[in-house]
Length: 485
Image (cartoon, rainbow, N blue to C red; front, side, top):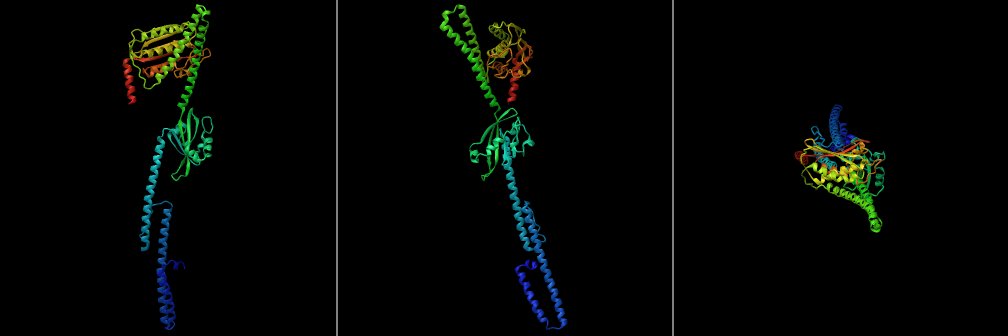
């Protein structure tokens, strides 16, 4: 029956006709002799066997061709596009079918290759854009698994590829061992997607002393299906530090301004309302105190103004050839009024025949005055401040040494930072914390010199700076220009 079903319709009719013809012939054989009958039977048997063999061969051939085609279709179904069927031993009908199959397989291969190439191209573009973004970017699927992360994000989170790729982002912990993202990601998932699309979830985390502003936004396919989310990290450390410094600066300035203003108001009101009741010496004492507070207020205002000017990127300070010896003597002379209250003396040592150097006279005067004022603040009464000026061939070296309580090694690294002030058990020094920072800006940024500090706790402290000669300054400016270019 299976063989019969494997035949074509025409062959089935031929076989049926032969079957009935054989029956009729066998009926007719009964009328012939036994010898003839045997011969006819043998002939018909041979004929039937031949016909059966032909039919069997056709069925086997057709089955083989169908199995070959079926195997080819299976190869395509598993993605082996381009698979070819060899039509060499196939029947004529099958050869046409194989040819059509091979053409289809070639087209599928071409389409697959072009699609994969297009997909890879788009993926490469996406990764290139992701890696070039200045902010940190983390791409997670809808199971919170990290699929992509750029270099900036790895630097911000202080991790490498093995530590973050293919991991659950909710398991990432900050420096304190606390889950940095878990709570906010849960909040993100519990918020309607439409709301998150309009306004990403925003929060801050702290990692390795960095403050990172974090944004979480949903990610969709072109079809609109939700597939995960993107985390954007923005390093806000400098901004946070600036906000802290700004608050500290405003607090310091407000506190420092309040004292001289209060003193001036009190003494001026007293003199205005009760001046006739005081003798000359008392009035002179009041005016002396007021003058001292005015000088202090003037210095603070100058510090603030200089800070604003020196921090400006486009500020250009004009320099002229000047005699540093004359500058030092003038500044020391002005400083004696400040030192008199604490009975502090000055020891000045200036190397003879110093060359003139290109400086901005007012700027260097202010820098030296800040060093001397700073030394006076931290010196005990009846001590000596030593000022030394020397020349080493390329630089003029200027140093100011006090006989104070010294500075720890840790604080020496920060004394030139803006708003930083050294507080000791013996001194709570007033000021804005800008003086030494202004010295650093003036010397290093505007004169290409160098500042330095040498000190130990319980010993003398030496602050100073080095100013280049005309030739050395030209050399430094050329080097700076080469770096910029």
